Length: 214
Image (cartoon, rainbow, N blue to C red; front, side, top):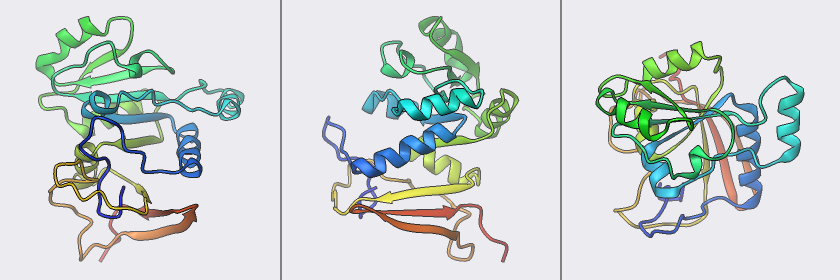
């Protein structure tokens, strides 16, 4: 995020917050994960491929008996079109869809993704239980802000990996790291700081997100 807490600006072009070294760090975390999750709004906004870019890291996954790419997971209330890059690159794709849109989404994404009824609205604990039954043990949640807010307010995140870019966005209409909500990680339940380091001009911070007992 930017120094003032934004994930992007309000222009049509994607705002690059990280530097090359930090993008490589993200690639490493992706390679170490069983699945990567983003919200449908992020797919629509950024049209990401969500891949492990390093050939060496993909080869190391295969050596460990894993597919070269982690599974890709998204959550949607209304469904998604089949044209997005998300559905045409990488490995397994899982779409957790609100009940009213399941049939439409299965038809749209036939042959491209597994569409799972996630409830109405989609229930995150149900999603995580289903992922666990599918062998997903380490899930990397990349965003966006609505997804971050839901995972954190429901106390479902174990760690926060926060990379802070050395500039301001200053646009109240732009998406933020999190939105409003009742967070268990509050002033009386402070998170544990696990790591701080410089990555070029980026500051990387890793918090244990589960609040420590009082």
